[in-house]
Image (cartoon, rainbow, N blue to C red; front, side):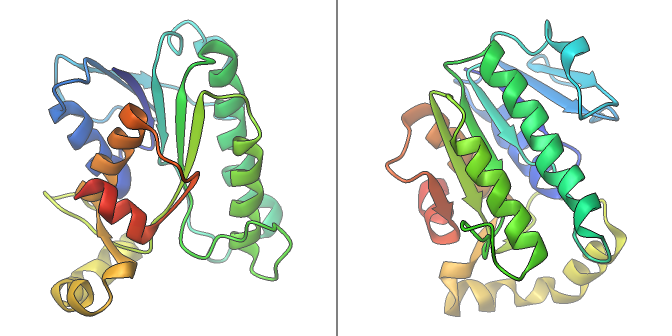
Length: 221
């Protein structure tokens, strides 16, 4: 299996990259980002690309893949809706529309989050934009597309967020993970489980198109 990974330097992307590189049935991983991952592996190629609104110059490198894991995302904190929509909807759809044209038999997995608003009409800005993004991707003619909605994600194997205040939150609350896992298992998953779940739906498919947190855990365990 040949996979493309967007957002490989973020916390979720780091976990997905680790699982993809360790999977015996994955023979090629292409990461797409503004900076290299810094990893060295015979399976891995880093594609450094600056304009996430236009992938026309990279089409040759983006052809011939079986799955795409889109883990790229930003926090909506302090952002105006137009800016957040540009970085969320516009970037994801620029990638998805390019990839479905180049790889129509591809499986596309998009990471949104618990609470995403599928109606795209609610009062919560980020949830509305994420819902609009999910709906647009699901309407594209991929072989299959899955919307992953994690809740609390525990980083594993040294994965860290690039956002400093996220790192602070995880540093302060990391000790809570065993408690949350025991008493609120429906709302807790790990970067490892997310990576494994993405690979599983790429291999086997799933009857659900929207994969909630408890489904991610079940698929990735």
